[in-house]
Length: 216
Image (cartoon, rainbow, N blue to C red; front, side):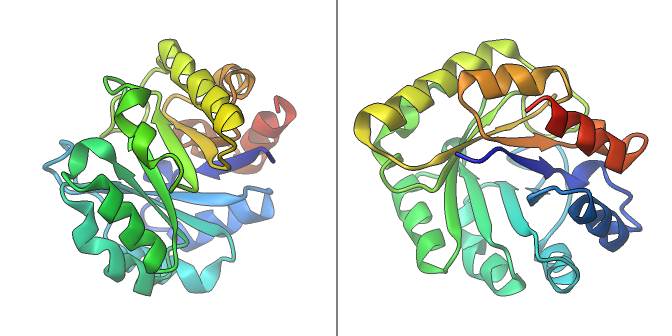
């Protein structure tokens, strides 16, 4: 599967999202990762569907919405209408993971399931035939700038093996602590979509994306 870079705007300039998204698009990124947090599922509060709606007219990039919220199924239609291309929801955040993923697909978006560092691949095996992507958190969710947890690569490898054995076609995304060193570990384990926030937006955005790309 094609390797893709997904800069997280959690680390962008909140006053200049449009400018920063245009910069990452020009630099060759494939996705814009948008972290939605509700202050309950994680101890942080960030963006709503209004940010997605404001970015949709300024970029053709895939808007990759990561829902770190309780009961994410309540917000599916709202984000679909705002222009999100894909929605990632945590298995830990809903009692109805299968139905919630179906709802995302029915709304016309790509559906992704997310697992936290403390959650095993076993927790999502029943929905793997349904999803377009699996997101493996390589830090504990909630805040940018955390250190990569290398033990999570075992889960990435397990997911890649399951995909091969069962004939599934989901992509594997990693999120947290991705830089020009850890991106190689994640790629070698089997991931193909790499969320990078702090590394991309601290310093020269174009140069930083180029560094990531060179390691792939």
